[in-house]
Image (cartoon, rainbow, N blue to C red; front, side):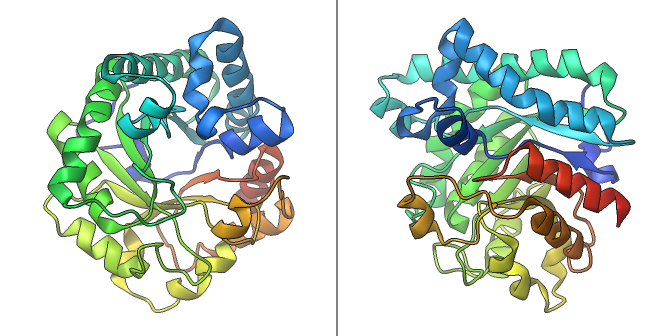
Length: 315
């Protein structure tokens, strides 16, 4: 499918599911080493590609069993930018090839699964933070961030994704840069912020401040998303009735209530309580009236997505 003149299918409402914690599932549950938590390295050989395909299978099958649901199918390219790529031995040309290949990979999955899923399947190119993702490392300027992220945005577009998503953004400046890069390559963009246990971004900004700043930079995203935080970390900041809450359509929460620092130091996965997580997603319907894109992040797997989908469709 392709996006229509009315924009991304998610903007027209209806439930869209996604996957869970890709990297934590592969590392902690399946014992697959990922250098620097980079899943894109698996695209380099047939065995790795099969691992990725098998990872996505239960999530796509869940969408196929959920009446009316669509699916947002994201590339495994969270670490496929220049700084992380250099640590993994990839030059600019190699990274561009990897990002194009990742886009081709999810498009192939889309082709296989779209006939089985009642809603639309949308391919999304993932752009991760230049830094760690748990620590605020703001760029020198928004223009600098845009220049940095544009090569990855271009490669993902060339590979054929229908949208870009800036995942685990720790501050508004880098998010603005990715939004500018997306506009430059002509793709709709989603910005996904991560939050600390106090509901603020690692940069210290409030969620509302960050959303308003990105929206006001001239290239507003299609919508915003939250990821890599447990709902208990941010439920309180959604209670003030502010208009910016209507810009949030996506949620990919952590399974664990632990802080980023605690998760970073963990040597074992914390899967939390899938049923409780599902109930917490449902409770967020009230403050987030447009929330309709549901996935998971660190520590989540198909159990959590089943619980989320079950709570959402029965609530």
